[in-house]
Figure 1 (cartoon, rainbow, N blue to C red):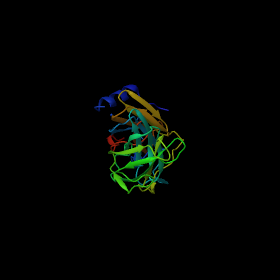
Figure 2 (cartoon, rainbow, N blue to C red):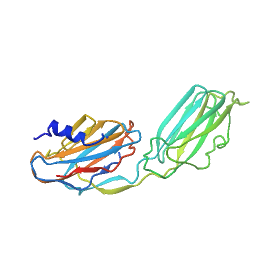
Figure 3 (cartoon, rainbow, N blue to C red):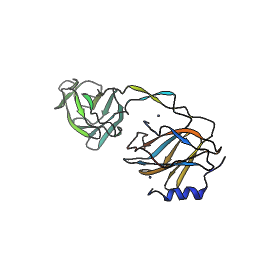
Figure 4 (cartoon, one colour):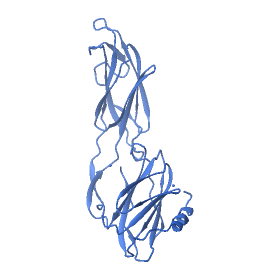
Amino acid sequence: MKKIAQKTLLSFIALSAMESAFALDSGAQNLTSKEGATDYFKMNCAGDTDHLNFKLFEGAANSVVEMPATPSQLFNATLTKLKLTTTVSAIEAGATKEITLKGGNGSYTLALDTFGTNLSVKTTQTYSVQYQCLNATGKVTVGSSTLTKQSVESAKKTLANGKTVKYIINCAKDLKNGNTDSLVVKLISKTAVAKSVSTASSALAPSGDLTAQVVRNYSAKNTVSESIDIQGGNGKYEVLVNSPTNKALPYHFEYSCLNIKNVEVSTSPFQLLQDQ
């Protein structure tokens, strides 16, 4: 199998100024039978990118697979009281989660945010909240908040992606059940779950008729019909596709800029810089 020479790779790098997720597809591409033919692409990752995921597909994009209509929308919840903190992360659309903090009597802060949601999603998220102040044996003590009445689900609220909202919840001593031991908050995501849609894509081919090299600065990874991740943070990533068999071959590839939690951030359309 022919490899891309190191000097060729370095010359390509010099041409640029250097850069189970929802991926962008390169669509129909074709490598010619010219000896040493190499297609050269570039894409840009922004946001809080940790790595680029790249998948090479040999053959035409003609089979049908199910993919999400929109990327996931996520809630995160944090309860704090003085120096005490507890967090529940990545609450998905349509899910319900509880968060508990043993802080005794006093004022608690409930912070909700939508960080980690794909930046391309513009629709706001909908949620409601329910809480209880409990003593050490699980009996209800005194609780109050402008958000809602204790043990009663609040009215529906909305929160835009990338935003944060905070609420104050007070727990106090109850004449019958004594002091508060903990605050329990139930967060109910009312955001609609994304429906799947059919899209064209081909299965990963094991033949190895094509090879691809993904480059970030002076770091590179090779792939022969498989998925790879290359760490590199924000910036420009480069892809070089060539054929060791010197014959015209159709192909396409999918790529995603992902953060450290494997959630897609700002992925740009690829640029075709060389077509052979």
